[in-house]
Length: 161
Image (cartoon, rainbow, N blue to C red; front, top):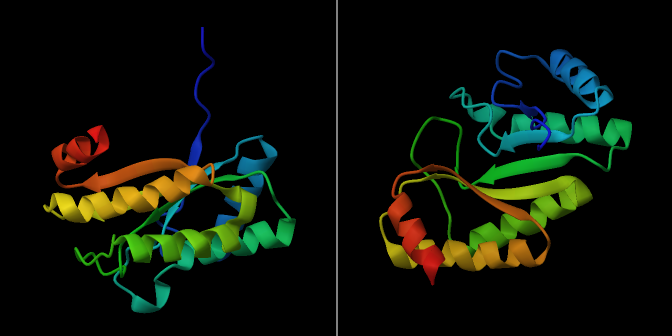
């Protein structure tokens, strides 16, 4: 029998309804309890305040740096170009590779999962570019993920290739 899955700490409200100090308290308790998986995204918090774009990841990085943590399992969702609740995204191979490099530098060994976030595209050729970037992330030992995919059938088709 498999043990139950461990909790994942989400960051969608960080810097919005959850102030910095509370975020750090939650991370302290979560980490001290032995939990390690944290979910974040470039567009968190999605509060329509342009100044807060990427704030959740900044708070997480600040906590990691302050504590010298090297064993988190950060799930990073990328693609959204703002936190204004718009469908604006960039999931091209070049942009994803740029973000992959950036998050490798920021999170180091704490980066565990590289995910596509809010993909509304309906063109198979564009999704194939995303898979090319995914191949590089996988070569680097990262898990891959999808979140908010409008056309999952296209992803399934490309994945079969």
